[in-house]
Image (cartoon, rainbow, N blue to C red; front, top):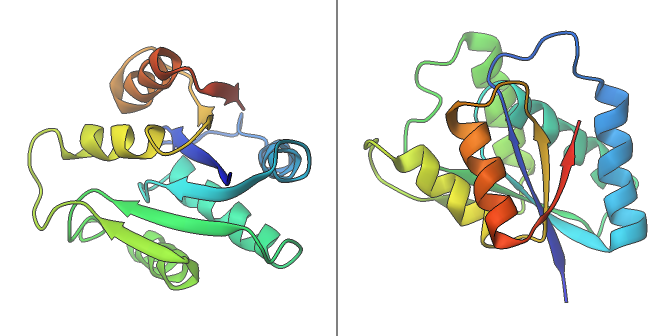
Length: 151
C-alpha cells in the first residue's frame, strides 16, 4: 500500500515556521512511515513551501510522488509574480495535477481539502489560528482518523 500525506497551512506564514523542521518531518514520513505520495493544495504560503520541500526531497528519494490538488482553474491568477513563478515550477515538477473544478465556487477550497484528506493517512499542517480553512482541514482529518503532525 502506498501511504499518503496531505498538507494544510495558512497563506500568511511568519517567521515561526521552521523550514528545516518541515523538511525533516517529510523526510521522516518517507523513511519511517513509508509515505510515497504527497498531496499539495497549491495555495500560496504554507502549501507552496511544502511543495517545494517535497520537490527538493525528490532528488534524494526518486520514488516519492507529488500531486497538485488545484481547487479550480485559475487558482493562481491573483498571486503575486513571485508566487505565480513558484506555483508554475511546482506544477511542472508534479507527477500529476488534479484540477477539481473548471471555475471558482463558494466551497471549492474546502472540497479540495476534503479530497486530499480522503486520499491520505497523514496531515502535516501549519496551524496557528483556530479558524479558517486550515482549522477546518485539521478537524476533518482528525474526524477521519489521520495522523496529524503540526509544524
